[in-house]
Image (cartoon, rainbow, N blue to C red; front, top):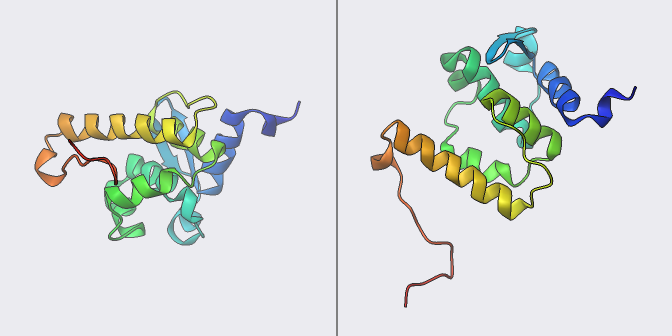
Amino acid sequence: MEIFGDPSEKAKALLHRLGVHEVSSGIWAFIDIDVASHGHVHHSQQPVALAAYAAINPTFAAGRFPGYTLIDLVEKVSCMDGTEVAALAKVCQVPPPIDWSTEERGEKFGEVAWHIVKKYELGACFTHSKPWGIQQG
């Protein structure tokens, strides 16, 4: 059986390389704090690492990625491959998208992001804007 043919197994392997694993559904733990603290995190894996580390310890995540903003995270989504998307989905406890285009992934991510903004009443921090070139007429 080829484990790397399964996106969920690839996602799990990526999370292990980032130094974390899922103890039980939605409960994450460090398996290698040195890797989590000092290991190289590819730019397209930063959203995965940040979400996983924050699920374990938000203070650690903020220290590991100082100054990382929601905008930084949103910008990285389009750079993520299927394994990274599946790993982020796993950490966030949502089903991974199946064969979504980059545009569809961006729209879905935006929907989830705005849901979080509304749920935690963060609206004063962000504004809706129209994509460049689209004007009301």
